[in-house]
Length: 348
Length: 281
Image (tube, rainbow over all chains, first blue to last red; front, side, top):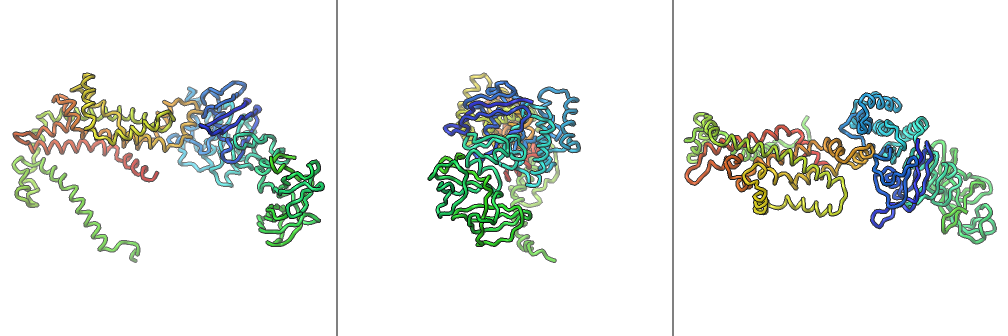
């Protein structure tokens, strides 16, 4: 187990700045997920930590050792790639033992270590097969096995589940999390899937345009997002944002609809009123809304509605008989209201 | 029941008829060459002067042209060609594969310009560089030597292009995974990239081999000494101003074709796979 820290890390390709001063500390044994939209720099950050790209500025430390200028093999990291990168001409066993062979480990020891890792991942019966003979899930497990076999200081995962179908992705998510709990190796996991990040990580780091927007425990970020971007990025369906102005302690929408607001925001200020879809219920003396689309999913019912002319989503944790065009009243949970500055997006 | 999608019998007959004519046009000269080489000298041109289908078949089959050929410098020329072609294949594979890998895997200043020059090199007619090449090998003292025949043919723009295209199609993740595992670039080239490229290696080997096996102009210029004559030069020596040894010409040509086909038969499976892969990528 090793710590990892990054200080003022920058990366540019020509004139394009990809990373703009990243500071990140990962504790020994911690599982950190980097999330963000495409092009936010999360994969570049991972590649810099791995040594596959050189940093334009800043410092990277693994286990307290400055590795900024070291090649990948000097960093003691293992990486699982999006496409698995299993060598097609080598068997599963040879793929898993590849790094050990390069380090001059005796063959008998390689065999023992490969068998041990294969047993952990349930790959015992596949050691003599070639990657082309495996299913997507098996390939993913072999790629993970290749990473764990040499017991590295740091695990790096670059969107390892994005090539799997939805069902397999959920299974592999659980397997990787269980593996981390068992091995306790420091792990940095890049994904664009916020559900993956929320369910697997000890800490989630949300990135945008080469910067870290917010980092913290998954539920901390979910419950108290630092800005409208983080609030909108985490959660599915994403948070509703209704634009209005503070008037008399409430948020007034353009059409005069008044929404409850927590105190503290200056009178007349333009704000984004944020509410998660699952924190809204139908009934009471709440705000008027018109149903546009009803999407029953079995246990839940998702509604696309209009509140004061603005689009919003409501997620009811039950079955509901509603019809498009129907007028309803919505009651938001007062303690779950989020207010953001309409200009900067910062939390108020 | 008749398959409604099957072509009509008339169309099938027309198609196969046309294909048969084309196949005959390709195969007939080779068959005639083969039969002529097995004919007595006096009968070789009989069907030309007095054409008849029966005239194409020799009155008796004889190996006298081949026996006579073995008494000439042809066996030594065949040996020279084999040495030159095999040495070119071995050295050419190493040099061209490494160059192709460098173009595919690394980013360096001037890469595009250099690659354009590589492509231009195989568009340029060989005759255009014969004179400066000869001046160079003479300066090295290589005239009438194996080096003169082998070295200029090792670096081959077409083969570099072929390898570059193949290596560029390998996902970079393989190289990066190997780098993280601790492999050097040399190790990645030898143990990851090259084992994946056997069809390309087979194709490149064949192209290098045939280029040298069929080579005539450069060997005539660079190695006029009979000790370094190659197979095409030996074939041409059957023709001179005073007299043409047709039996020798046809039997040596026939042998050159048969010997030149051996590498193709050995690598056929990989060669065909490479062409198919190239078609779908």
